[in-house]
Amino acid sequence: MININNLSKSFSTLDVLKDINLQVNSGEVVVILGPSGSGKSTLLRCINGLEELTSGTIEVSNIVVDAKSSQKVRNKQIKKVRLHTGMVFQQFNLYPHKTVLENVMEALLIVKKWPKNDAVRKGETLLNRVGLIDKRDVYPSRLSGGQQQRVAIARALAMEPDILLFDEPTSALDPELVDEVLAVIKELALDGMTMAIVTHEMTFAQEVADRIVFMSDGAIVEDSPPDEFFSRPQSERARKFLKKM
Ligand code: ADP
Ligand code: MG
Image 1 (cartoon, rainbow, N blue to C red):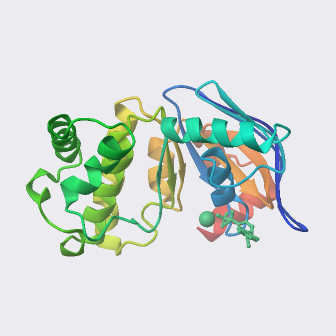
Image 2 (cartoon, rainbow, N blue to C red):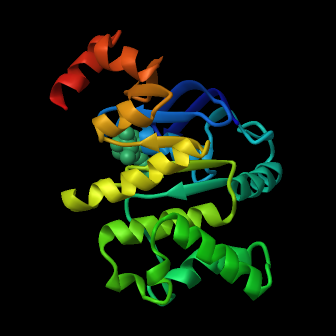
């Protein structure tokens, strides 16, 4: 589903991603761990086309984005990639002047040009899935952070992405609201959704991940099954990281 080859990303003189190679198979849940500043967000943003690649290639759903292609070709490919990926951020970024249902339907109406009736039906199905159908006509400001994040997940699902990317989806939440969001993500995992998740929730990571990818200083240092990573981390950096958690 995702195939990253020799990806590097620099911001002027700062090398943020260094020769990243990563595959994510269909139906797999990959949890990305690592200290702050190790490049986790930048990696997700590169996958979703929010950052230009400095070198290397990223293939998502058979669409290749190559740093060496012309700007025109890259833009075209990135546009396609966006149609196949959904992203959920730490800040929920819902449209404040649209209701919950309107937030979820937005892309279906604007991007997919669905008729309103179909979009409403799909939106309701998704709100059912995240347990928020009773909030369909409410504005986001009336919801808790956990509920807003569940709406954001429903919105990301609306485009039926091949892969969902999560960047610390629970980091902005009060502790008592974390579990309801993690429960929704776990459900998606059980349904076979392909996901790459950056999180600091270690118990969740252990439960939901097929693989743990540990990053440090812009490089992938470990890529192993969760049992292995948590009980026998190979690198000193991972051991140090786990000790601090
Ligand atoms: P993480 O998500 O693991 O905390 P990030 O990917 O956000 O790490 O950041 C990795 C490094 O890249 C950090 O040193 C950060 O300051 C730097 N960085 C991220 N985005 C930018 C940007 N737009 N311009 C310059 N530096 C950036
Ligand atoms: Mg980050």
